[in-house]
Length: 170
Image 1: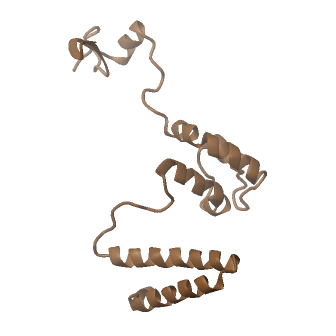
Image 2 (image 1 turned 120 degrees about the vertical axis):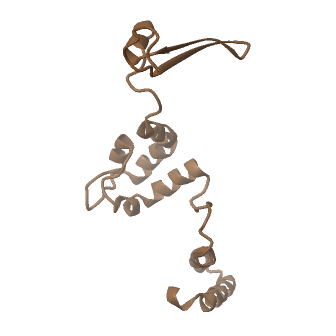
Image 3 (image 1 turned 90 degrees about the horizontal axis):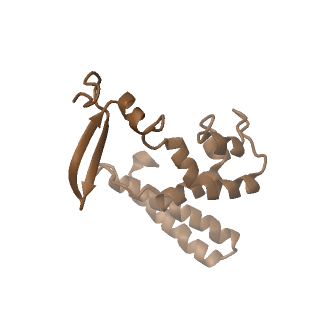
């Protein structure tokens, strides 16, 4: 569709005048003609790093205080740099800044565990592996808290789960 004003360029901005939720008039303009009428921002649409930084602000601010001057030994990026850039410098940053990332992911997604669909041909294996990891974390927690009877029960569950796994994942 051509611009209704200049009739030369492709229309990329569309204005609609609504009255009682019904379109009364539509105008289709190119970027140049639309900017003559109403100045438009240079970018239309959300800027992903900017959007993520907005979501991250409360967590990242607290984490910068907690993590202080922690830097990645590989790339040298600090948590403050991550806040500023909205991205990491290398793959090792995920482990170096794990605490902050987990809190951020939990804020964005509501959980740190994947809750999406799993292909049916691997779903049982993935579910068992996930359960095994969960039980191992629980066992570590119970041992730290010196709850040895409960820890022994969890250990037994882990042993049973490992026995029932297919041999190629052991």
